[in-house]
Image (cartoon, rainbow, N blue to C red; front, side, top):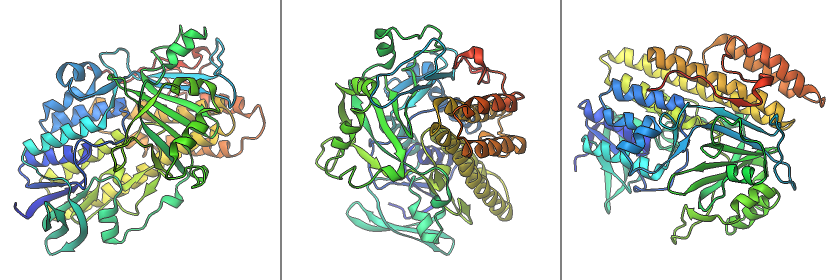
Length: 506
């Protein structure tokens, strides 16, 4: 085994493997390092139109036609049916009250559906990460990347000409020399600790944690609604074919359904609620069951469900627990190193931003590393990358925290606050599809006029007290978003059913 490489990438999930694939095709000697082996359980499964457009752009820009198949449900099923996935037509939200079954009115006071595609063929997808990550890793290896799985990193340090990554691999101690080091591990500990970077997580507004797993035999919300004669005739898509959100006051439960019958289910709450007493390390399932019993409809959907992943060291299925999701390093790139965006910082799964943000980092990193530029220009590009990525994480924090602030007041306030994300996503998608560039940044993170509206909305949300304040907030925000809102958000006649118009998909 050789020990010297142009590029070292820590983390062989989809982002690290895709970047290794690109760099190997462009002639760089690349080593892909991971402490685990494929296939392995992972979350961060819900794709979006922005992620789809990024996949298409990456496929075309770097000559990877195989990647295009993953950008649409229809092409995925025809060309890569062996990779398990789920159909995602959009976002669905159902608001629950503790101790009461779900209720609905003809005007949909307790639900909200936003379409992300006009047909099943062009639909977004949920990624069963154990399959998808392994596939990307296999493509990277086939392109020439050296794969070091079960590599336990023991140290990362700067050396003349780059970096030295040491660890235990194949029953030996190994030291790898790499000129450029990329952290796509998710945790970011390798480079962050090696450089002594600061953690800025406490400065973020969103502080949530999650308990989650994959289940079989999860009930259908759309069938439950039909069985109880609740209105769905004006739904733009089946609410199960979605990133499905069940709102429960200060928190929510996600349900992402895969075609093989598996459903990813997770409970998200403020970090302060995830105490050791509530979630004893030896009996997480008891806390899970106790929580579900407080919400009759959700409990009914889960009554026959069986946990199938992840597994503990004995191979027994066990719920995963992440008491605090958010993190943010003080830098995302520097001389001869960078972090993929979702390694540099993560906020919360509410808006399904993770896959798209990671792919945007792969695109930018690949352009920097494969570009024909001087050392000075490359350092400048890495410095700008760091500024952009950290700003984007803080921007996502604003979009997400607005929804959590709103949900403390009412579901109507949440629907209003969520429009900030949908405006940001739709217009970023349109820019990328039209020009191949996100002119105003990821999710409009650099659009000054839009930033002002989001900031003003946050101030109003912090001051919501009167019972009628949500109505006033909705009216005010409807007026503010009007120049961007050509698809019906917050319009009374839409009844919270949005068949939205995104950039044309092919």
